[in-house]
Length: 375
Image (cartoon, rainbow, N blue to C red; front, side, top):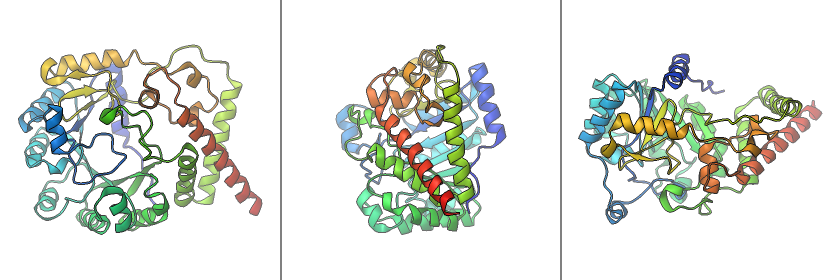
């Protein structure tokens, strides 16, 4: 059985305080869009040639370090270094070491394939607060089909080396048509490695890459995504825990039905644009890395003005009225980024999410009742 993946209370407290005071408690620094993998559902990946043809450029190490200093002065405590694959940058440790010296709590998103040799040794001597490593499958074959590289065994061994040294690791799992049959193997690996897994069967449309508002065929249908979510719950929960989850879903839906219609607007629920921000590889600040707007160039505007702009513009975003008064609201994963990427508008209703949520609730209740009937 896995340990529960819960956020430290101090982090929750600091984000709540940051939201009240308008402080950028957490920054997501997307150091590059380059990656040594080629996952089809990625929302940011570009080759060096594609970057050059776009006329854009990655920020230099000095620019990232300067922005981090400005952000820290404004209240930033947590920083996530992500990509692409951040360690494809030859100057990665110049950025990383400078941020450690600032006293920032650093997490790193990685595919885990480069965490070996000298790179591994440097992290063992000076580890980050946490690694978030994407585990894309349970075999080399799945990795080859999904990522273009049969790196499963290598990634698993690298995670094992980190865990042996006591480095904190969490796994990210994106459930897609390419790896949906590997869920049991992935959970088995997580238990063996003693790491938590954050799984999602929802893939955002890659609007930052090509403006597509569906997903280019590289994600599951709404019904299949729901089925995979429920399958994952059945794998990781005991029968008692699954029953509690099913009962809580029904309770939240029933309680909402009994309430009066909501007329007041509801803003962005998460921390995006209120206590956290996202910086793209070419220097644009966004509330969330999945969006393309609101957006401001930090290198031209400066960090402080950019942050105030993002805060102000994010406060103008509201949940669609249909979602606000939907009986599935409290069990649904709808958010501003979902509405925008699915429909092209923050006021649009993401039908894919509606279908997925209803199917997931229905299937959870069906399996729960079948399990109860067998007792």
